[in-house]
Length: 262
Ligand SMILES: [Zn+2]
Image (cartoon, protein in one colour):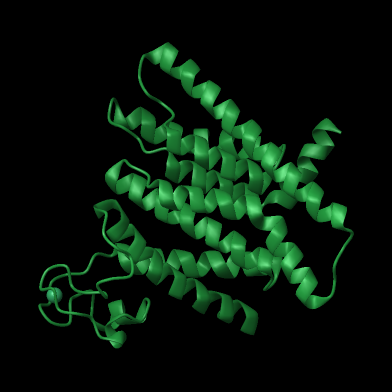
């Protein structure tokens, strides 16, 4: 219980930082400077205006100076990130794998919101997620080394090689799929950003889970795509959601898969 609360607080804090990334990166602003300020009246925020979730509720969703409404997006992103960190803590415990996996899903969340709002995905966040996913065995090695529970070195090496292989295969498949769809409908369907996210998914999930995640993402995107009729539907949020669902339910899904195909 205390572990889940700890995970929740870390997640809320990271979520607060995600909001900064979501607001500033698409505009090409520096993420560290200037300090947080109201976008309308420009007054710098005091720390008690900046407590995740709580400040938004206490200020009743308005700026403390000019009373201009503050978007519901901020507390929503904080809440989702907090829940993401605690749900993953239930699955992984408070380990290095937990923290890095939570960071990757946080980045996928930020990418989803930015894709939804701007129809664009910043490379900086996208490649950071991929790098974290590929480097996972190194973080696990570091933790094992610190806690004195090192396994045979081949364990980490195989994991590292497998991650790179899976990322490359899934990214290549997405690239080919993009070419094929463009040939069919004469329109850009899968962007560069989707290919990078596909690589992240491959490294995180491996086979066959990554295929199921892509399938789930496509299914989830189908309905909005039908309703959008010609409007662009951002695909990144669905890829992120598919990855999340399959990652959380990986054990039952693999059990079911093995029953069917093994
Ligand atoms: Zn203001």
